[in-house]
Length: 251
Image 1: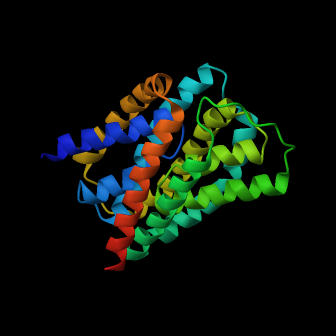
Image 2 (image 1 turned 180 degrees about the vertical axis):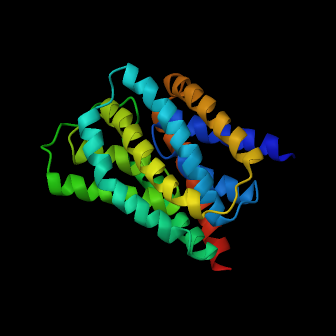
């Protein structure tokens, strides 16, 4: 199968997951780039940042027009994540591929478990909690570090943090998380641009385009299917990916 076709299929799947579940779908981008398109772990995390930035930014516009983005809260949360994202991105570029693969497998497993425990997208809203600045800064910094180090958006971490730590309602948390992800991914990508090896744009460009279009269809999929069913299917896929990557890293 040609690189173009593989990139389009992988991008569509990642976009569908992002659009349908509101977070966690970008975790599939790195393994798809490595195992389907032949990227090295370092190149895959850089390419994933491009894909995540573009997809999150376009999805952010859609949520913003619907009034689901808390700009001030999201900006403060994102600001706490910028320094860790930059530092982690610089460090990641100099680490062995096996270590990056193992670390990514661990985060993918965490994403799967978090997705399994989190409420479905259409479920009732959680009660609002008072904001604790120290916890908010810590959560923002942790998300930035994960984004910069592994090239993932971190929606599976951002949405629960925005709900549990900052007290946002679920719909607003999903929209605001896209602002946080876009800012952190762009900050990490800025660092990677000067030091990363050249990317195969013949794969990255169609992958990104398909992910953007897939995210739109994912919203419709979420409306047509049961959210909990989608989460369970995604959890099984993600756990399988995490196990395969961990086995590969330990060889």
